[in-house]
Length: 140
Image (cartoon, rainbow, N blue to C red):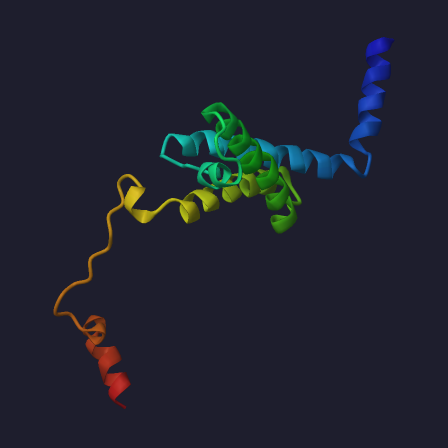
């Protein structure tokens, strides 16, 4: 009898108009946390340099915890607002996308493992890549 009552309560809760947005936010939060953990392995500094300027002379544990909070919780809020997910898949992508975008924007190119600076080819003009057909059309 108790299980039946709990099942009915869960059904009512699932049909509540506030249930879907809460589920989408929690899924976005999960995605942001997961991507944050994955990004740490790639040298992602997150908000630590900013936090060290705002809150000087604190312990490294303080910076790590605040960075986790700022990147994950605040990031999931921003991801939910910016992407307005309408499904759990979109919500998960919003969480992944927020932290992934911050990782790309905040990590200097020289510090990204496996990525070198793009060297321009010397002696190649911008028009050299055109095919003859395109060159003929350009000359008309």
